Picture 1 (cartoon, rainbow, N blue to C red):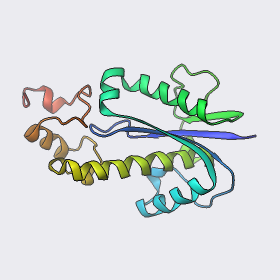
Picture 2 (cartoon, one colour; picture 1 turned 135 degrees about the vertical axis):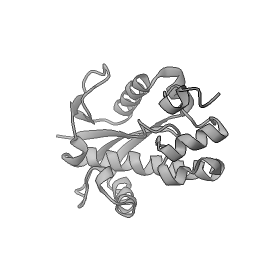
Picture 3 (cartoon, one colour; picture 1 turned 90 degrees about the horizontal axis):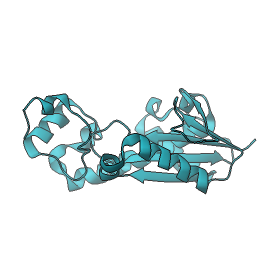
Picture 4 (cartoon, one colour; picture 1 turned 30 degrees about the vertical axis):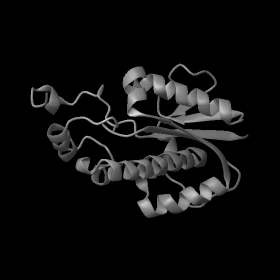
Length: 183
């Protein structure tokens, strides 16, 4: 059975895109796993193997998209776009919600159990991290290369110092900023 694995990267960060990937593997690839459990070097090497040995589709949603439409709506739209662009008998999304999308199965921690979902996880994570490193050059004051846009204490302190940029998700509530520490 042809399986399309789907995963996302960048759901939680305060800055950067949400990236979703769908992947159908055509050949076995040794070493696939949840992207978070692999080193950056290993993810990069596997990324190249995946794009050479799979059909895939990558979707990105900007901070503005997320702020205007909500993260759940973006995830639903991404799932529908992937399913509309990759032909498969079976679609499996890592997680516990299908966001109202029919014809989609979900599985918690599928990215560490199912090769096609692991491959999608790697495609999404590498794409997200590459994009963040490009943004780090454009917005050096936020030190994105150190935290990949996540809400670390340092990142929050830099938002307090420099304010939000167009790459920040203003709809995400940051407790330290809600306490009157930021205008």
